[in-house]
Length: 261
Image 1 (spheres, helix red, strand yellow):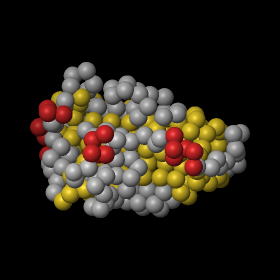
Image 2 (cartoon, one colour):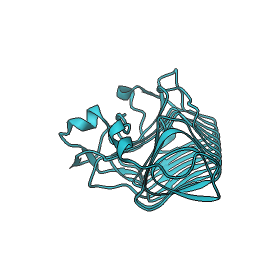
Image 3 (cartoon, helix red, strand yellow):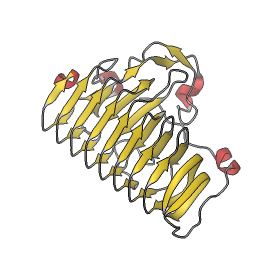
Image 4 (cartoon, one colour):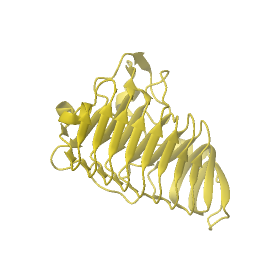
């Protein structure tokens, strides 16, 4: 499991503030920094959370945009919609295995995103991603330590490392045709800083640690109330003991590659 790159203070200094600190109207845009109370927000460039933010409505990432939600609390009462080539980061402001304060009341739905980084947060609905990724840079696609009220569906992502680890999912998990085609090249930044938001140098060939679908030891189980379904992933979906992985707890059926996980 690769490290994540948090936005540093240098990025915050060059970003401008958009929106107001009071509850705004039904539609706003963000290309800069964001904090405070807002109505629905559409990201049009790079939008970085610099202090706690609540969005009373939907958060929409236009094509090729970035939402950097690491650090301060983020609350979205509606849905999060991620467009083609966009990059979403939410949560990851608590240690592994600890549920943080960030919330999405509805669904997270991504159509051909560059990647999703979703961790330590509560999602009321589904987490769904179709397609996307890149072969030109090494990115991770981590879904870790979340409480998810609906289903997790990840189909057809192509890139570096992806994994679904130590989540509590009240629906089913369906992971199909996700492919690792690059691994980190000789790039120290990959190990020391991580891959958000710029990725790191990539070399051809799959990342053997990818496709991790697992608990984190016995202390942080991945508990799926529905079914666990895995088909056509490269490498095949796996529990990786070398990365601290342990078997999933599945109340329904384990199907396909995940039958033994």
